[in-house]
Length: 186
Length: 196
Image 1 (tube, rainbow over the protein chains, first blue to last red):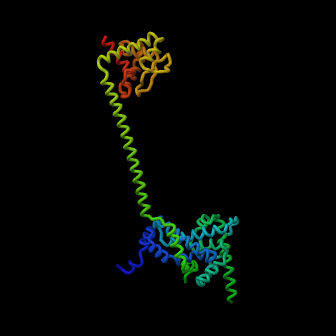
Image 2 (cartoon, rainbow over the protein chains, first blue to last red):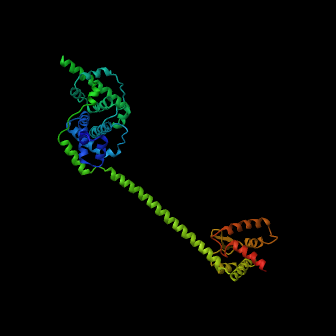
């Protein structure tokens, strides 16, 4: 037996152990994914307090939903989806998104937002956190997580047009923030 | 250089110290679902369904068999009970019944009541048992046809054919082989003719 097998159980062992209610396995699963999932929580939440609530709720959901995991995709991807959904549910409880009838096409060039690439992760996060909650949700879901506008519309309870509008506006706001930062630094 | 999308996607942060203790406390309170038990309960569920189905099939077949045995017993007891003397008496009685109906319709209510122990039977009809043991009402006219059906020159051959068909049905019936049955009446009547 290797040291790895003694101290770092495989993913399937972790899943099995958690399903059986083994507290040690539950702790190990938490340790393996907590940093990544807390990152997701912080990206979607309005503040740290909300992120902590989502973190707790998300992990409870993960443990409860483990028997349903079919290993059709990656385990981490499955957990991440639970956390994104939990973040959205949490957000929807607090904020009511209104449908915007006007569909503003994506007039902001991606290249202008891609200027964020040169920044450090914390700075990018700070800039994204300056977006209003509605814009931030759509931006995170579409640009970072890769959800389609249809999926976003279904999850947020809005129309596809509204999702597109929110994204276009989010990019517009980001562009302005980037320009302001640039002019301030010069 | 890593894109801002990847940077955000892979962003990690250390959660607060108390986060795990809160989660583990909640896990203990809620007792997270245990799959093996769930599997067991599912297995038990299917086993219970299978057992219930077997019990139903067993009980059903038991009742079916007992019913069939009883009807066979009744049938055999009916067959055994009728002795040659009783057969002759029965023939005479049935002949009397039929002839009374044919020739003296006024008396048929009394005959029906005495012989078939039936109540509330309309005056114009006599009730006999059908192929499945059900009550069948026949008029004196039909009774005439039944009696004459076995004769060499029946009044109407078409009626004779119909009665022959009915007779076959009645003979194949295991339920109604009593002297109140139509086929029995026909058989007894023709047997009586031969005896005479």
